[in-house]
Amino acid sequence: MDPYDILIRGSGIVGRSLALQLGSQGLRVALLGEREARPREHGGPREDVRAYALNAASVGLLRQLKVWDALPEDARSPVYDMCIRGDAAGSQLGFSAWQQGVSELACIVDAGELEHQLALALRYAPRVDVVSQAVPAALEALCEGRESRRRAELGVAFEPQAYGHRAIAARLTSSLPHQGVAHQWFRSPDVLALLPFERPQPASSYGLVWSLPEARAQELLALPVDAFEAALAEATGGAGGTLRLAGQRQSWPLALARAGAVSGPGWVLLGDAAHLVHPLAGQGLNLGLADVLALSQIIAEKESWRSLGDARLLRRYERARALPTLAMGELTDGLLKLFASEAAPLRRLRNEGLQWLDRAAPLKRWLTARALGQ
Image (cartoon, rainbow, N blue to C red; front, side, top):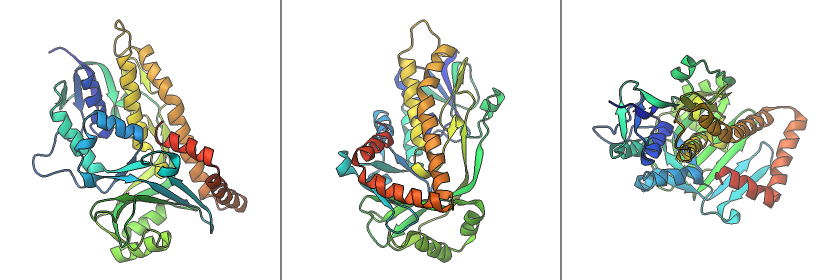
């Protein structure tokens, strides 16, 4: 058998999206991963409490792959407004899609449903094969996540800087309609986000992402449901209505990391295998899908005489992604450290800064464009 053009290691959202994108460009793709890349034989998607906030660029890629419009209506929810609060009275920053001249600030999507629809799309991708073991290929694309074994085999440095924080994710129902408004609290020592969603209760559900110090996170995870809901009510002050848990709680440790190298002869890193950022800006998956777009463009524009595994070609991808990933990592890291500090001068600075930024319309438009991937 002739070797494949691309071997993709990792069959999560980034790996599946890359397989579909490169297959559509006429390349022969092999997709390898521990996670099942085929649709489940019985039933729909796996149960997954995570919800991703996707920007316009990510939605555009998924629409191009014929995946976005295949998602059930209740698996995606537009965000029209965002309310960000600090840890002092009156410390607040608001973003409005209408004021920014866009249709929506982001779209919240069900993680399990997105993976399922990508798997369905792969079933009809004639140039993509799901394989159970590594096969020869001109280029290996590593999309295996933060624990990438192949990255370690290549000797690429990847040393996560642990924050000592843990993210808690859950699905919630509310006594009030969400009206497409996302809520976020930045304060010492936690960051809490309520993402408007349609499941399990249409128009009045949220995806929760709550980042806290490890010890406090473990305490909350161990609480019975009613006590956890009481802690959530205290943390949100009733801004999202009366919130009830609608399923299990999941959690994972948080860290900041960048790979020492993102490409080399015959290999390239994408997604969490290349970079980790704090989820406070909701940009982790957006960075990974932006990697997919960048690599596919580099490959589409390559010289006919140059091989897919050519180190100089792949350095173009590395250069294209260096600044965006570094900037997002530094931004999220800086925000976390600013709002985690108990120092009085920093506490005053961050709360006054939110109020100042709320009045700076041009800067808000610039930030919105960056967040949308424009």
